[in-house]
Each structure stands twice: as C-alpha cells, then as structure tokens.
Image 1 (cartoon, one colour):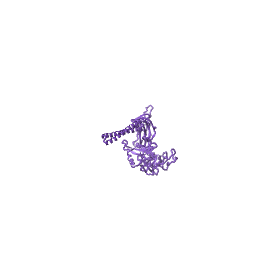
Image 2: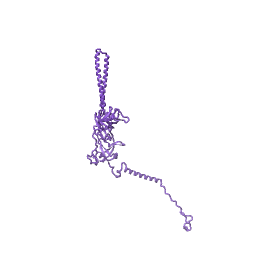
Image 3: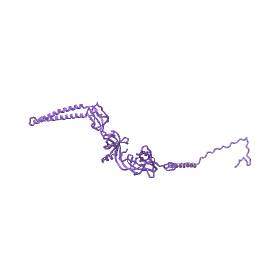
Image 4: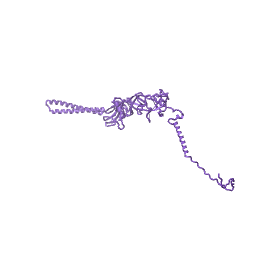
Length: 456
C-alpha cells in the first residue's frame, strides 16, 4: 500500500498536539437492502403452488365423493340402512278419478195449484216422507160449494137434453106421416146437439170442481226428505206464488255427477258399449274414506269447451242416506282390471336426471340405478312395464341417502315398522304383534291388497 507523499519510510508519524483541532471522521452512508433477483421470486411462487396442489390432492382423497370417512379412518365406506321390497305380480285396477257433486234425481218445490187459506201442514221439517203422504191442507169449503153448483147445473141441462131428444123422436114420427114440415125436424136435431154440448160442459165443470177438492189436499209427489217449511198455516196461498210450501228431495236412489277429461271418454264409452257395468266409488272430501258404491248410468252428450271435460252420472242406492244432496265427493271409476302385471311400491319409484328409476339391490350388497317405465297406479302400487322383473329387490325407504354403487344393509327402522300393516303402533321393531319387519340380512316382504279391494 502506498504511503502518503509527505511521510518518509521509517519515520514515525508526527505526534498530535493537544491544541490541534480534531478532524471529524468521514460520514458513512448506510447501504439499502438489495431486492431479490426475479428468478428467486418465481422459485418462491412455484414452491407455494406445489404445496397448495398437494393439500388439494390430500383433501380430495379424504373428503371427496369416493373418500370421506373411509379414507379419514382407514376403513371401508359404511353401508346405509334401507328398507326394501320385492317386485311381484298381481292384479291392478285401472281407475279414473274426477271431482263430483251429489245430485238428487228429483228435487221438487211443492206449490199449491189452487188459491185458498192454508189450514194445516202434515209434516215435520227434515222428515222422510213417502209418495202420497199428506203435506198440507187448504180450506176445501169454497170448492165444495162450487162442486154443488156444477152438479146442479149439470142436472138441469141433462133434463133439457132429455126433453129435446124426446121431441126429436116425436117429430121424426110425424115427419114420416107428412104431418109436420121437415124443417121442424131439422131444427130439433140442432137443438139436441146444443143441449148435448151444454151437458158436456157441465160435466167438465163438475170434474174441475172435484179436482179442485183434490188439490186442497197436497201430497208428496216422490219419496224423499222434506226441507224447511216455507209457509206457515193460516196464510192465504196462491198459484202465482213462486216460493212454494216446501221442498222435497229424493234421496233413494241418488246420483253423483262428476267430470273426467275428454281423453278418457273413448275408453269409458267402449266399455259401456260392450255392456260392461262400470263401478263408481264415492269418496269424501279428503279422498280417504269410501262413502258408497254405485254404477255408471250415462255420459253427457257434449264436451265442456272451457274445461275440456265431460260430465258423467252415476247412480247410488243410498240406503243408509250416507250421500247428501250437493255434497262434494271424489268419484273413482273402475274402468277395468289388469291381471298378472309386474308391480312395485310407489315409494320405490324415484324421479331424477336419469328419468324414472329405482334403486335395485344387487347380490353383493350394493345398489344400482335402474331406469324403469311405469303404467297405471293403483293405491300404493305402480305397474312396471319395463326395467324390472318379479323377484327383484328395490329400495323403498332411505333412497335419499343413496347413490349408484352405494353399499346398503336391510335394517328395521321406525318408518318401515310404521308402514307394516301387522305392526302395532308404538312398539319397537321386532316386538310388535305379527311383526314382519325385515332385519339385517333378510328381505322385507311387500304386502299387496287383495284384488278388488278399494284403495284408500
């Protein structure tokens, strides 16, 4: 290292005197941190990306659709408990349903046919009356007097007719002897005809008076139930009144008028034209309780263009008066019965992306999505036209927890136990009287109604 020019080699540095001023050390500028190179920054982001990708793969294996608790705990996926039923064959009814109204075959407003004072009524409100029973009595005395007058006039005119006929017979005899003119005989014949007309008129007056006496006694025209009394005794009733005295409604037999879509009419007409007696069941408003059974009488002759429906009338004996006029009912028309068809419980049928399908239980304990085609529905059963065969096992309970290929086990749960008809309510599975709830490893039996039994 070169020394300064004012210092000779070997000489000592000059001593610093105390009175000499000290020089300040040169200022040192702090150095700023240097930014990392671009290559090092990209390397850092690559490491972060690889770490995130690794965590994603681990999470997918643990929580993905094929992972879950099986990978988390190191064990196979647990089997889902389900309720199952066997696909079988049997009879199924083709039933057409429609909204209906109970309509009496006769609803009559009883009115007076003569004018007079209402003397008495012969019924109680709501009473069942028979045809011909007395309902009311109108004062007959004015009409009895009119009858007597008509009968007197008839007797008088009958005598005049007899006298005219006698004279005619005498004139004819004299005319044959040329004792009187022929004109006299002819005039007498016309007189007899006039008297005959008068007598006929008098006879009609007598019959009218007698009819008025019959009208004074008002009787029921049909067998049925009377409603509320509309006029009280003591009032003067007239034929011009539109109120009437009482309304009588025929209840036995009674009819139900219901509607069906126009598309169903050809099938119904075909059965009726073949002479088939079609049965109609009337159910209550909740469509759960059967009220009465009847037969289809006729189909209306036009289609209602506003609704696209046709009216039908069914007749019911109504011997127990269970059907009440203007009552709302649900009508079920039994069109025909299909014999030996493949059927499955409605609870097994699912709707989704594949269409209409069921979960079919396989021999290895897993389920598969089986697409099916369905036909008619009869109560709790559905006709299967393709996709299943008798003996197949399908899931009827717990399908919401399944997917294609899931493992299942047949278990008795509360829902399956409650749905079994022989199980007592409230008892645990396996303890109900007549219990047939399936246990793990067994198949649940599918109960079907006997053929012809009404669906609830």
